[in-house]
Amino acid sequence: MIQSEQTKKINVSIKNNLTFVIVTYESDHVINDCLSSIPSNYPTIVIENSGKKNFQKKIEKKYPNVKCVIMKQNDGYSLGNNLGIKLSTTRFVFILNPDARLKYNTLDELDKVSDEINNFAVLAPTLIRSDLIEGFGLTKNYGSYKKTLTTTSEFFEVDYIQGCALLLDKSELKDIGFFDENIFLFCDDIDLCKRVKNSGKKIYVSKKAKIEHLGAKAVRDEFFNEVEFSRNWHWMWSTFYYNKKHHGYFFALKKTYKKLITSIIKFLFFTLTFNSMKKKIYLMRFSGLYNAIIGKKSWYRAKIK
Picture 1: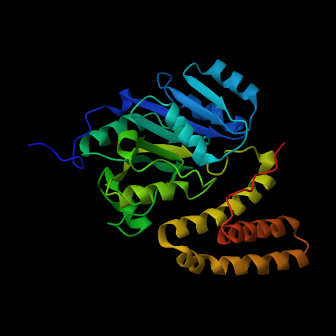
Picture 2: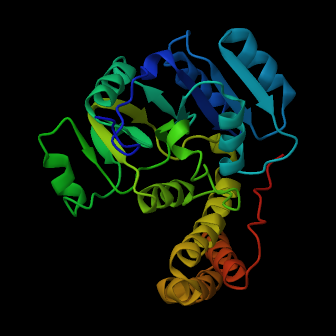
Picture 3: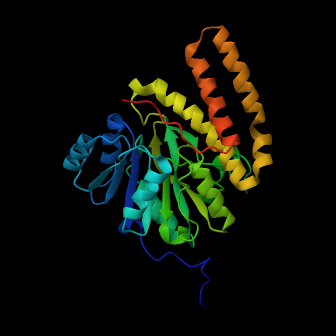
C-alpha cells in the first residue's frame, strides 16, 4: 500500500543530512560557545548582520566547518535565516541562536524522534536555562504549558515553538515558504509555525533532546540600551503585523489598542519622573505599534557603531 504524502515515513537520517544556520549581530561574546557545541563534521552557515569582515576571518579560521557570510546591512533575523537556508545543500536545516548551545546528545535524541514519527515540518529540542525548562509553545492537545511538561511521551505535537532552536525539513516547507522577511525581529517563529499548522503539517518537540539557551544574550552588554529600544519597537510592530496577517486588521487593532494607550500613559509618567531609559522604551513601543497600525514597514534599526 502506497503511503500518502502526509504520512510518508522519513527515510533519511537527520544526522547525515544536516546544516546549521546561525544569524548573528555583535555576538562575538557567545558565538564561540555555540559553535564549539556543534560537532565539527556538520556544515554551519553563519550570517553576520553587523558588516564586520574581521568577524568572518576569525570564525572561519577557528572553525573549518563554518562558512560566514557578512551582510552589508542589517536586514533582520528572518532574511538572514532564509539566506542561510538557501545556501544550505542538505535536506534538514537547524536554525540556532548564537546564545544557544547543544547538549552532548541533542542530535542523537532528535534523530531517534524522527525515526519514530511519520514526518515533520519542524522538530525542536526542549530549551533549558539554569537547569530549568524554559518553554517551547502551547499544544492543542494539552492546552497549557504546565500540562505539556507532565506528558510521559518522549515527544509530542505542538502548535508553535520558540525560534532559538528549530530543526526544519526543507522538503516539507518548500510549498509554505520559510521565514517572512517583512518581519525584522520577533513573531517570525510563530508566523512560520502558524503557516505550518494551517497547511496540515506537523510540529514536534523532543523532551530528551535539550538545548541550553542563555536568553536575550546574543548581543554584547555594552549595546544593551540600544538593543532594548530596538526590541521594544519591533515587539510591538511584529505583534500587530502578525495578528493583522493571520486574523485581519480590526482583530489586530482590538488586540493591541490597550498597549498603545498604556505606552502613551507610561511615556508621560516617566517623562515627569525623569526616568529617561523607561521613557525611551515606551516611546519605542508606541512608535513600533503606531507604525504598524498605519501600515509602515519595519524600519527601525538599533543605532550601534
